[in-house]
Image (tube, rainbow, N blue to C red; front, side, top):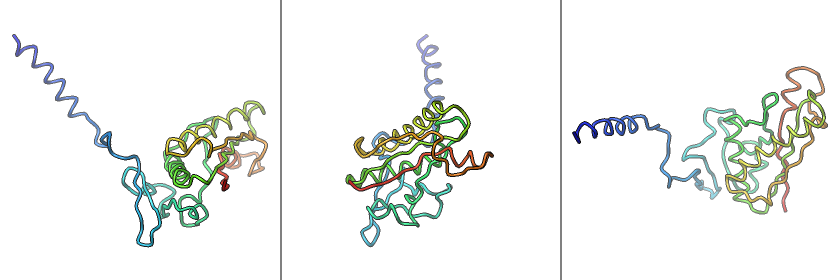
Length: 186
């Protein structure tokens, strides 16, 4: 009788173990790694790997040294996050980029960033200001998650008021749906 009750429990437990995903890290594994190159430059990646592989950041270096923010070969040189139409959801490639910016801010407490939210011209002015604010807040949450402090991050929403592309077509609208990261030293 006990064996007949125990058998379903054991089957359930073994099926749960078999279904465990391979990509789950132990709770004590770090979200990022920091290494030093031979010349002492602080470098890092996410989840123990260079997280620029397989993305539009491919082939770029990763360094959180203060001057890295202006290094053309560093992932941090990319300071614009683009969004889909009517969305504040951040794509996977941009999540990686934002994580690097957050780690940079965490490593450089004297730096500040202003997250400037933008929208394309479609929709009312009020709606676009709110959407651009939600986009900037999405980026802010990810930056803070990586260790930046709240006083390092400012959010401003421009809505449709500062387009980078002035045509009225899909490509221009795509370029205008963005959050720009603007750095300054404190």
